[in-house]
Image (cartoon, rainbow, N blue to C red; front, side):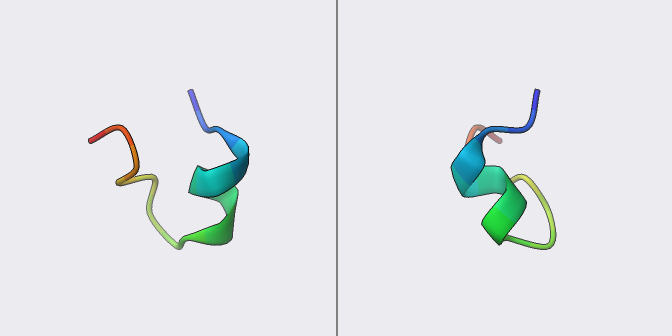
Length: 16
């Protein structure tokens, strides 16, 4: 699950 914030980063560490 890649959210809008996750797309801005190289790796989806927003919810990691």
